[in-house]
Image (cartoon, rainbow, N blue to C red; front, top):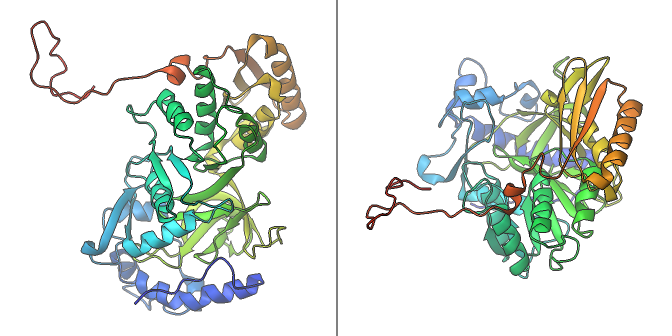
Length: 436
């Protein structure tokens, strides 16, 4: 029997939305108890079955998912699975995720909730990985469900260097792109390296969808400026959950609270609250294959019920990323997001796009790529803003374009050869059977 999932409306207050969520909880809890992980967790006690029981449910952690690899979280027969995925995390231990066809209907619908819309007249360039992570497959499925043409550009593939993607982006008159914020800037730099102007030579482009990195408002504006003012529309999610938040026309991120229960966890006190600042905890409401109860994403966020001009009656969220991206320097702590704000607050004519920093205990070292004619101004202004805003010992150095992102990366083309066994006279056969 098909599930009747509500849309992103149908309530007018946080309390009404919470009532919608509570009504789904008994089914969610029953589904979770079909998985080996949750069945074992509650084997020695009364399992949670009602909305009231949910208050006592313990967090599910990333380590729980690693320990349950590969099928410990599975709540349906394996023959019902549509896809298997693993997170892009760097722990070295696999984190498995799986989805049924019914799950994929929900995944695609959530991704397609872009306020600018996806239609059959669109051509969407997917410039995220198609490997075990979900991101490329998610955009592909959502675009096809809307009737759009998909260009599977992939990422980190030898077959799709930046120069080739820029050609496709231009020649196919791509209207929408899906990538991370850094890739949006890399594509712009590669376009310039190819003799094209991102703000002029891609007139069909009408929006860029971005995710996978915390994105400050100042960097979002800079990306939009580089590409001629097109909207840069952010979303937030994970391989384990799919899309869980999207940006509204007012530029605010909203949690899709009609599809999941969201809570904020304070690791210092152990408290779970509906709003506030802390780590985001997610309980999907419409997940078949891999139900998750109070799954701690461990991303630092700030959730609020503040009304938004867009009129969406959904909680808002600011995503700060992992706490690991904050380091002590001298008397203060430096975060990646705060430093990014200062770098991209540099005047646009300086054209500072690529930068890197190392936070040593006694000094913050920053490098920026900048042309010679803007070097003095950019360095002076960044030093001044670090002094004023961060108040830490620092050193700012400028390197010429290509010093951080090599020019060969922007312009390079590499042939991908298929395996070969038979060679002619004088040919180099050292590549036999190898993919080069």
